[in-house]
Amino acid sequence: MKFSWRQINKIRNYLPAFIYDYQKIRNQVSGLKKKLPRNIRIFYSIKANPDISIVKIMRIFGLGGEIVSLGEFLAARRAGIKNKDIIYAGAFKTDEELRKTIQEKIGLLSLESFREAGRANEAAKRQKKIQKVLLRICTGQRKNQFKKYFSFTYGVPVEDLSRILPQFKKLKNLNLAGLHLYEGSRILDEKFLLEKTEELFRLINDSEKKFKINLQTIDIGGGFGIGNFPLKEYGEGLKKLIKKFHFENREIILELGRYLIAGAGVFVTQVIEKKETAQRKYLIVRGLMNSLLRVFDPKGGKGRVIENFKDYPISVLQKKRSAQTEKVRICGQLSSTVDSFGLEIELPKLNEGDFILIHNTGGYGLTQSFSYFGSREMAAEFLFINNDLKLIRKKGRPEDFLNNQIY
Image (tube, rainbow, N blue to C red):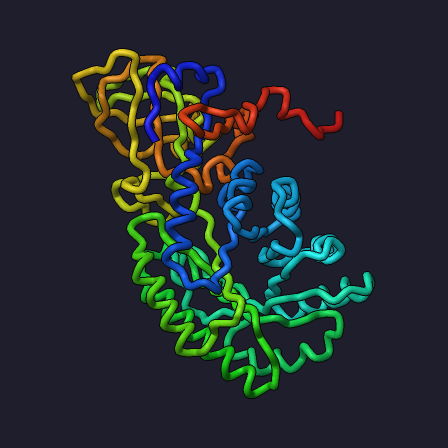
């Protein structure tokens, strides 16, 4: 995604802003579909980027919606995704969330425990409905960047499955359609994912034989990393597993969010001021942590979650490009050490008013930021389509911070 200085300068009053490239999204989805078996259904994990224009694009490309909140349910509905094509996979759903989604005849509910199943059954019973559900399981071998920070495990442990599955017969208003396994995020090792999928397939085969049940829907999770994920090898391996277990006629669901949208997004901000001390030079930009929560640390950042700086290339736009370079630290407007990239970056020599672009920020950008820290306004969003920038979210106003407050 390449922009001219003139294009960005036209939207300078909207900055900071996110820009999403329609063609990149299209290429990512179509490339994915070509490498996967035919009976794989792709669901877009809306939490990665819930902008309704982005969700609509995913719907146009034939994807369902995977949600974790009622807000995301409304985004999916507004974007035109039918209720039957929505999975509610959020952990620890409230009674109100269960009641509302069952009332709306949502396609699938993924349940975290038998206790949650009981609450869902009561909600369906009161509405005289039969709700199609999945039971989420956990193997206890989660693999992601948060492993050493979070020890809490979601889903039903595999060792408890033989005790819980027979009890579903008591829940007359639930239709147990299958099992759901999600093992982590940002995974670049396709062999790990295939091993977990084979474990799930074998578990389904054994459970069907032992308990005389029929589990036709299988959610194999997702969690592809945005680096060089070996999609071809993964697709070939998945085809072999489906053939091995004779699952060609099963509905197999793959949930993906960041993988589909991250590379299509760029965060654009503007240099407010340059500052120089005896130790280093700083570039102060608009809305860094307020609009884009990314913590970078060259020393590994012991004790906190740190992003890999290499995953977020930086480029600049200047009216007159400088031939000189300098090492600078990029900081936002908040008096917090977190509102900084935490490392020095070599960039062309910039001046006030020049633009900085941070790439691969299409997923978990705006919605993961601290927009209201310091009572700041929310960033704008644009769609880059047909070489033009289309506004899809207006920039917030300072007075928005007062919304819903009672004086």
